Image 1 (cartoon, rainbow, N blue to C red):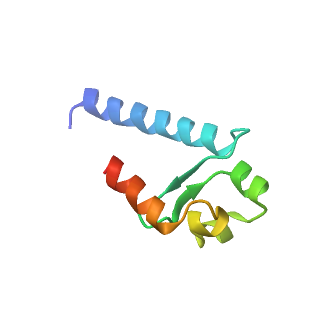
Image 2 (image 1 turned 90 degrees about the vertical axis):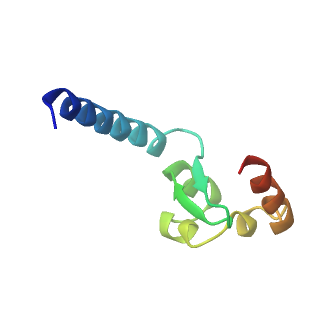
Length: 82
């Protein structure tokens, strides 16, 4: 691998790390969900706002914390964006 590409990979990793830190400590709830409604990632603000630890939220689904988001709605939503 040439030095130029290695440098790009390092910078890309540094930017990704910085973005992850910003999301982790953002003053608003942020989370990534999967097609099945499970949480792939949650930030600390989401945990604090919802009253769960990170580990607890990662074991739940969007359906468990928001009763307005039922499985049918979630399935249709993912069909639209998939």
